[in-house]
Image (cartoon, rainbow, N blue to C red):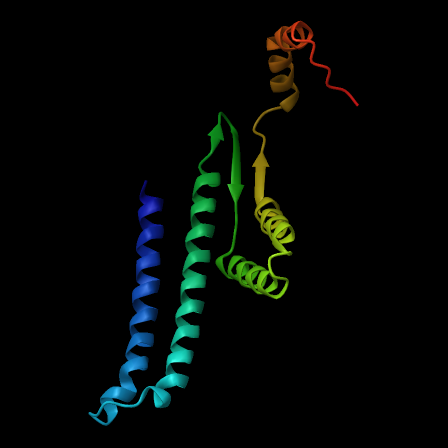
Length: 162
């Protein structure tokens, strides 16, 4: 359970340490002259602030997603067999950003490829380590098999074939 709280704490730390200076940067022109500036004068500052905040949020989102996937998959064990995951926040942030950009350019037509690209990265970073000979596991499951499914299919006359 400690890993989860570490991820949440890191997310809050990233957001606090990066968003507070960005917010202060956006109000700095207002404080410089002690006068209210016109909105036209602040538009470049607002644009830069919005871009920086979006980039920070995107990285924080990628960090949390990568850390949670790594935490969950790395703690799945069955006897001596286990899974492990090694997603990187930077790579995940790049995939999310480029997928969003391509989705916007193609007006959503890139969506299936974006899903496949994200899933391919996650699966390539996930590994299964067998602690015992898998032939014993397959043989034990094969003995448990019954003909119930085939019998029910024949009873309801369901024909599934190619």
